[in-house]
Length: 275
Image 1 (tube, rainbow, N blue to C red):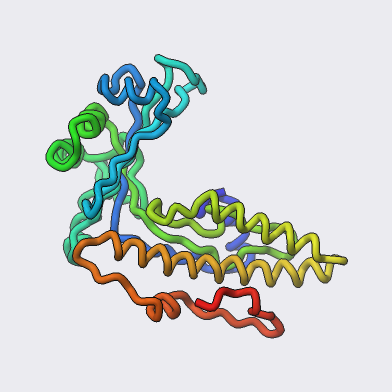
Image 2: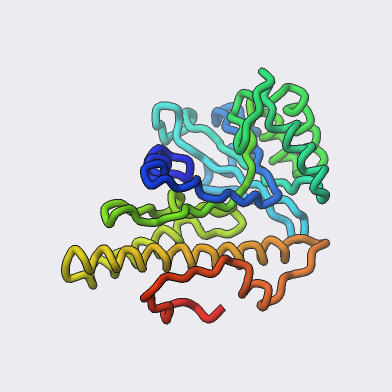
């Protein structure tokens, strides 16, 4: 389940928890899909001849983009029925006021409705689509800009970090993967974090001799995976700073204190990393 999915919302409402905190990462992702037959010849040729993913991420460029093959509308996996999906990550304005203005403009759809986190494909204002195409032509290589220009119904989303306030509910249900914590693509944490959480969960269950012991181990598991999630958030933020030409990288001391401290009576924190 995702961070805005029905499962997590229902569990949080039953426990009267506030929704997990979203932390905007100060960059956005444009995205779109087009039929394989409408893609620029160079992109189509590369993806048809063994490349699963095309990436564009020049050093110190403050931009990142990728394109990949995805199944067709009915699940087709062969040419010419597949689709090509692309995403272009861009930094917003360097000033808070500029960011607010950009977001307000981008996330109001062509019907006048404002969207908080994501503007679905097909709802972007025509003038914003035009600006996107012009910007892509100026900033990206031809093969990538032509792919974006071929897409007349792109969407856009705000890249954000999210952490659920609880990872387990009454010893019966646990949150794993994006339902528990979701990070921006520059973290490269998605599949790895889900595997780590499952491995720790398997260990907590295996070491439980009865229902009471299981409930206690799940409570400790919940604290542990959320704590490690905040550690990852701090590391990911430092990666983001390192990638920005104008920002100074944060020090190890900053990282040590950049996630909220947790405390729970009777819980041994010996398994936590030192920093």
